[in-house]
Length: 244
Image (cartoon, rainbow, N blue to C red):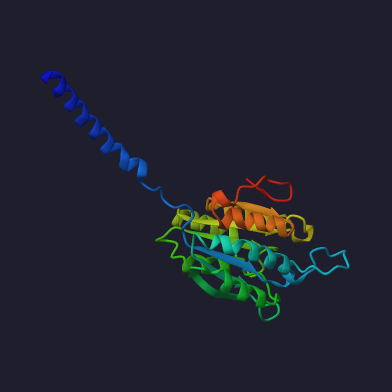
């Protein structure tokens, strides 16, 4: 009987040790996903004041489609990360204007929409300069971060988006640049280079290039690039796809 009692006591101690070792591992919380600071780089160049369908008499401005999409996405996206805003192209006609409108901020949906709703598209497309400014705000050499670029056209201010992507890829492995091309491939007058530059910029930083055509596509693209994986599950469509 004494031997049995000793055996049972040893078994209990051994089991206690196993439980003590495993319980912390089971109860430890996994790291929160998609919490890096993010910057939206928003296109307010003159082309964004154009009609969504140039052959239609119904006026649907390009920038209005993006405004509606952001208004749907930002309330969810702001729950997980701080978000900031750089805009380019607004202001004086035909100028290379870039503006830092908001540094990464908690609960950023309302201040971002105030800026975006007030934009008046008129200028050129200083895409490279705008993305560089967003990266600097994120302190991209020292910290991980995400940039989500919205563009409907090619660089027109002597910048080189693909070269910028290569530099980011070499200097900042934890910086991801995602590019949303708004009707970029469908506008043949832009030429192939605009699409290739946008795609290269994303690929060189481990990001995603998405081609979109309307509000619903924009919502899905912003959710995929700005939101969390669990909140942005969607089936790829022909009009909205990652291009690899």
